[in-house]
Image (cartoon, rainbow, N blue to C red; front, side):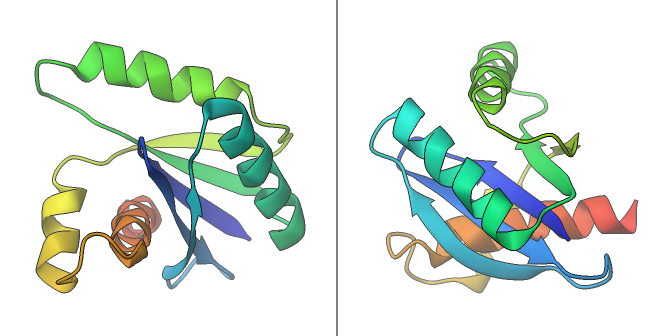
Length: 123
């Protein structure tokens, strides 16, 4: 199984692909603090039997380097021994907002993760 995450400050969007063909949004993870979120993501990866983790990284923009550093630090906190791949997440939130009207219910974050996973699967 391939799992993709979109790391945000309030929620972590989650999407899965069972056979590497179709990306499906999953339940997002509420983020109270970095360590709790890393534990919850690690537990979710274990529960789902993930072999690959796709992580969205923002490309371009003035804060690209800082965001990449923060996201990679967060990933370093995970207990996951599968393969980790980084995927450009540019404009995934814009695309997600076109598909979801309510950005606060958590589905938005997982739709963004689904778009990141679709990009990974289609490359």
